Length: 353
Image (cartoon, rainbow, N blue to C red):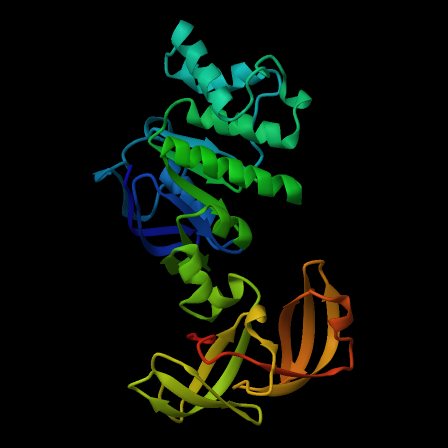
């Protein structure tokens, strides 16, 4: 089901929480609304569901406006953050609740409940109650209840936020598997960047009610549209440089940061103008004898994370985060060590402030 949002505005009193948002969500796509708490993403999801009405704009399913339809007639399935399971109903009864409301009875209801419970790997647990289930199992019951009605659009509001870290990873894989198997258009809300990158076909980044960027996870990570998106989509270093030269033919810029001069691909730049460049922590590496873009620094802090080491390095007049693989314990730097670092000319990404 194709979902379109056109010029959506939502205000609560004098506060505009969604500000002129336009989105096109493709048929069968796993589309994620990502942003910090209070940015408007859940409000937008609730408007798609029909729980809130926009003050301006239109919402279309398959090219037809649904603004005149109440929530129960929009043919959407909703998975809530707290799952909202009925504690006095069994797993099968929870899953069947939406079917009963739609007049489905008898053998058809039993067959559809059994099929969806098999799909979410809960077959044989029909008679259990929510209190007898783990958090991951409760989450799958909530997902089955939303899917059994065969909705045109599946809506999910931070469904993994109540799970522990390890279970979140396994459940996000399960959700993605089920979504791909069924091919259902899915709109997913989260504030977790890693979760969004793991499950999404495309991501929409929100901040203060404004849409910042819509792209694939890789495109947003490697080519963020602005500084907010760059910093929100993972750890990064932003260097505020001054452009001294730019070769339009090659796209190579020369710029200074601190007392060093660097060359890198910039796409476009204007000599004399400030230039903000983004470097992910793992794009900065120890320098070799022939490395370009060399600069010196001093290790200030070290954090061992098993497969990697996070260093805080004082360099270029600021503190940079540098991530290195922990290949050999003997090669670890310690606070106070001097280091020579570098980055490849094709690594930096210029970003708008």
